[in-house]
Image (cartoon, rainbow, N blue to C red; front, top):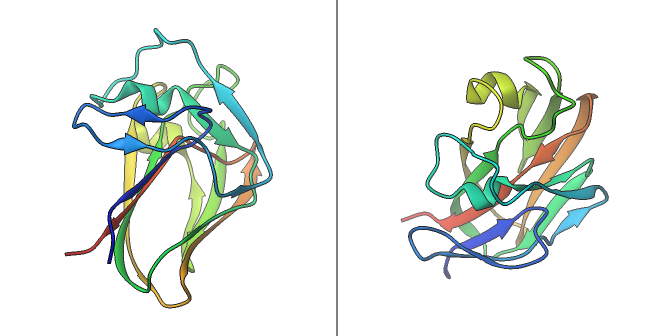
Amino acid sequence: MGTAVRIDAGSRTNFIDAAGNNWLSDRGFEGGEFSVREDDMKIENTKNAGIYRSEHWGMSSFSHPLHNGKYVVKLHFAETWDGVNGPEGRVFSFKVEGREFKDFDVWAKAGGPRRAYVDTVNVDIADGKLDITFESGVDNPEINGIEIIPAP
């Protein structure tokens, strides 16, 4: 089935997390822009603040080739943009292999700004690739990292 794939969204370089896992630089997105925050920005609720200091935002989709089979997909989010000042400041929807997450509010899910939040989705890949689509609502969608882990 292969090994886990980790993408550090918005980063131009690879990242090694606290557990020694390699996160690849930004790739697989259609459209959007990068934002990189200050190296000393404090991110609560994680041992790997570096993942959350970069983001890909305004994208329409993400795709990554995979062997067919079952995977656990972990989507990493943190609201780090000063333009969002509270809940409902950024609300968007996304689909992971067709499973819909409507009106997703990073601030509300994480419990405030600069706090890591991870959403986990179990998927069954049948077409040789993981597909995630994003749809703007209030402001643009954003994501900080994506982990794709073969299910046991």
